[in-house]
Image (tube, rainbow, N blue to C red; front, side, top):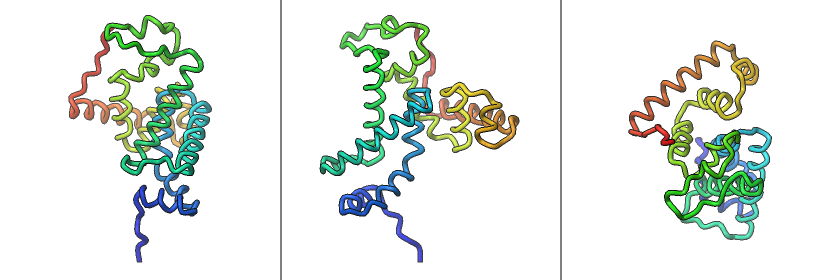
Length: 196
């Protein structure tokens, strides 16, 4: 007999009723997407791991205090917490200007050009959020290579060692990832040109 797959809301309810294993299921179900979201923004694995842990401490505390609103879906709610913690981190480190209401305000003007996080700091930049969403649609192996290459600046040699595949396989996955991303861009009619 097949075990019934419980939805997120039911798992949250079980966790609140004292069943800690329900939270472990939630965590394993969503950790990859949440970690991907964080790492794409911060471009640093150990920082991403710290923020990931901080996210789940906050999730647990919020659930325990009974402040979780069931109307929203669990994953988008956790993603929002992670997103806000990333923004808090950048603000604490003075790398992200507070966004002013003036529409003509040029964010680039207030950030040093040599800051490797310039693009990622433009959290309101539609292009970055579109690309992030598209990366999530890639097959797992391709998504992994894109994140390691573009967001962690790893060489293909490092990627091949980390993923236990040959350099050619890593290169191939990257090539297919780019082909798939191009298709997704065309299908979704996304403009990827940045205005200077």
